[in-house]
Image (cartoon, rainbow, N blue to C red; front, side):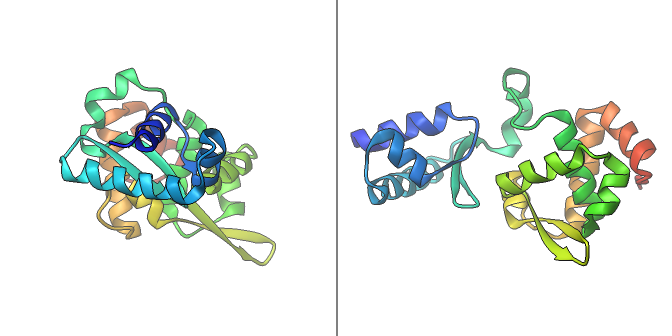
Amino acid sequence: MTEAKKIIEAILFSSSDPLPISKISRLTKMNPETVKNAIEELIEEYRGRDSSIEILELNKKYLMRVKPEYFNYVEKFTESDMDRGTKRTLIVIALYQPILLSKLAKIRGNKCYEHVRKLEDMGLIKSEKKGRTRVLRTTKYFADYYGLKSSNPEEIREMLLKMAKKTDSGLSNWLKNKTGFKED
């Protein structure tokens, strides 16, 4: 492995946030093409060794993470990249997509505007202007981030409900009480 790849691998491993090539280039003083090539090689190497770790491209930013199917083994040891409120806002968007920002604000309160900005910056949701409000939807990156094979809203709803039941009974109850979303 070249020194450039080792440095970039260390940076991706250490960062909890997805990083654009420009930032990695600035940090390492390597030209962007070198960084891009090294990341592409690292992605292929991790795929080739059938590892529980992967490097994922999210909205032209790169993130090293544990594959979703292994996350339950390490979640006790990791910090979340989203606070609980932001996660819940994302869940409401994913469950009700497409959802108007104004409707989301009625469900989640004014704090949701900050959450929406963070989720857009992460590339997990997109918004389109509609009159005086915006329509929110999850992105393909959302599906990639959570290890889904499809970005179909129905499949996303099923995954979220299963996840809520399995990992957080409080979240499952919150889904029923706060959003009115009924589980099958």
